[in-house]
Image (spheres, helix red, strand yellow):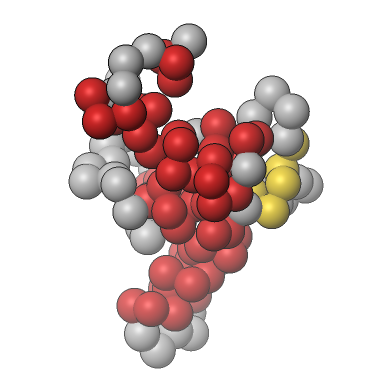
Length: 118
């Protein structure tokens, strides 16, 4: 497993895993998939944007983090993980989504927006 190879200062994945493990425990430190609360889909961000029901960027970020702050691993299935998500996002420089078509409709664009806008 990549987490056991090399010293932390030489292994970016291990370095961040160890930091997260100390703060949140083993299982949440392994989480790399975050999503909506079990039984829900997406975020409420699009609703707020379309209806102009927000007053600041911070409010939109808060809504996004609240809605996407659930961890999924082989042992966790939607565990509340708002703080680990925030820590993981601190090391993200770029998010990209590759599409295999140039044909889009409003549903696809809205879904993409609500998933990546924070």
